[in-house]
Image (tube, chains in turn red, purple):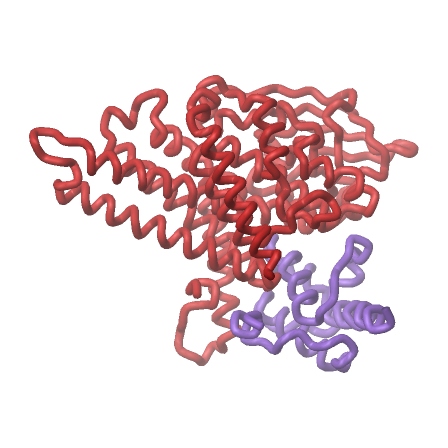
Length: 393
Length: 101
């Protein structure tokens, strides 16, 4: 008996079932800018959070493929709920990989159940895509560390119980854990942003916040390249699959509308231009799915190319998501512009997904680097051929 | 194992089977791919300024995957990763510890 497969099946089915229960609520969450606390609790109880953690910490030890499909099921219903899965997974992955034994024992079980909601506080006013420019200071002060700085655009920053904060300690990039109830932490919720409106985004002000020295995650110097790097790699992976779910949902909605909507005695689906749109959408969704599956395969064997394969999947899937959601709005016409329109909401969300966890432009630089490495690997004299990541098996 | 297909490299070497010279050559070949041309044995490859922000994690995955070791939080010391010789010594130490355990 292959228990891993059984686990994977249960993880995907659990996410699909949960998605069904919240499908009709997501538009209201987006409108009010709030993901109800009960939903977070229920998501934890349903085993949606940190599902790839080892069992000893309360995780399901699910495979990358199962994590991906499960994330797509949630992404097909609500990007903000998907963002909860993403940020929880990011902080769990970083702690699971680089946290001390004490940090893992203390936090991973709470993250796995949702008893603690995580936030990843990296971006600053002058450090967005270029995270190496973070200026938040982490200063030794007796047995403690004092943290001072302003963090922006923290997903679930308004409600998070545990923040993974990136700053500088003795000039070196460092990562530190900050509980949400530490004195000196102020939260400024963001409202009405373009997309992910229910993801409780907040700007954070840390004014001399003190935490024990044992809250430092990995030595100073490794906070960005390794701790944040692991978090962002995991984040790109789940954002990619979330985009696949979003794109699938938009393609389904556009197809259903085109087949059912009749104007002037002609079905929309009988107009060639509409059919061509559906055809292009089918290609975009299928290509994104395959690149995400390829990323899942190389992640499962911990291939060194997995980081690059994940960048590729996220890049392609977020572009597919914007394209398919935009076309779906067009096919829906005025109905696509309705305040409660699923495809309209997803177009706004998809646009955000092309910026977070690596913008299109930065992804292109990484992908070019990968292409050049593949060229070196194959030998400069050999004829050009696609690199291994470019062709999903 | 599909890794060899994906990377065009040999499968993971069993613990204790590779000589330091083999480890160094394998590490050097990986780095040559990553940074453009092969670094000298004691050259600090991070000081070149040509590695990307993803390189550090790729290097970790490479040594784990290729040499069948696990890089743990307590192994995070730049002295272990800066040069070909440093990575070779680190891999040798981890493999010795693994085969003893």
